[in-house]
Amino acid sequence: MSASIYSICRIRTMTTPSGPANVEGFVKDGFERVRDVFRENLENGTDEGGSVAVYYEGELVVNLWGGWVDKDSCWKWREDTMPCVFSTTKGPSALVIAHLVDRGLLDYKEKISKYWPEFGQNGKEEITLETYITNKAGLSGTDEPFSLWLIQDDPLKFAEILAKQKPLWEPGTKHGYHPFTFAMYLDQIVRRVDPEGRCLAHYFQEEMAKPFDIEFYIGLPKELYYRAPPDLMMGIVENTELLNGAHGDDPELTKMVNASFTDVLNTNNPYVREVPLGSALGHGTAASLAKLHGILANGGVHQGKRMMSEEAIKRQQVPRSYGKDAVYGMDWTFSLGTMVLASLDDDKPSFPLDILDMVDRWPLQILPIRLASHTQLII
Image (cartoon, helix red, strand yellow):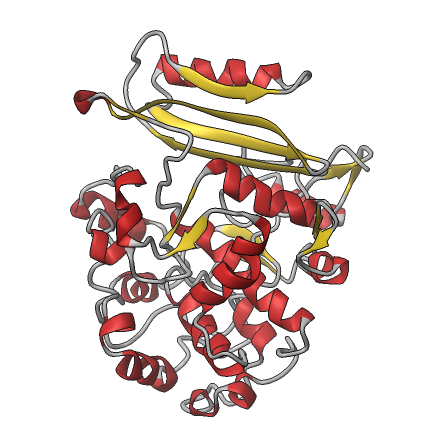
């Protein structure tokens, strides 16, 4: 296999320099540099605590953890520490859709209204699953702000709000990040096509996570909250200023999207973390995320058992939305729900050069990775 068949996950918290660091776990021969850099980051204050894991050709070759969850209370980062990984959760959510397409229960080219008739109103009648999952549907936010708890407390009202929403731009004409609504709409679709009527989170857990021994949860069970470190987020004022400072051609659109949900910064509340929101409330270890994406990088097979077809994985590697994002003004490249990063295969670019020219403007530039779902595949 080519040297690009890697799955890398790095999860961390940040602080000031703290001196010698405790680092546990292992690296296989040839990957010692990863341990050196991980330790260096803990010691120089780049990270306070965290974990990093790497699968290479189906084998876990790096699994490291170290530093602190909370140094003041002597709470060390452990092998089983499971932080909230925010938008990294969108990757598993997109893979649920790919899994259902594999089973013939969904088709990217079909209109969403075929599966969810109530969706087909207020300008959304022609929106296909592909248009939506590539961030082109214009459903990045809602006119009516609401609490995430509504997903569980009143699912009928929640579905009604989504179904009535008008697109924020003409569907298909541009792309814009869907920070929270992304998996909300996908969840409604999954509930309607799964023969067992499961939500997206339960489908992922039962069809993809448990069969492959991947400990990753979309919505953290309260009994596991003790394993979740507090989210070290900026204050509400600073975070809002940052979000509003990144915008596309219409700053009012950005403000509207950011204001769609009333409690997105309350993720240290265990009742919020429990909400099965496939856009932002995934929890897992670095090793679990690396394993999931390592299976994809290895052709969809792990130890002789297939998770997903090779065709489904190849579809995820084709850029379908790129250029300036309408909501946040960033140059991002998306496929069918996953963020795609350029790579080098046998020293040859995996993307056309015009796309690589755009990617060169990213701070990440070119990485030896074939498929990325937001941040989990980044060293």
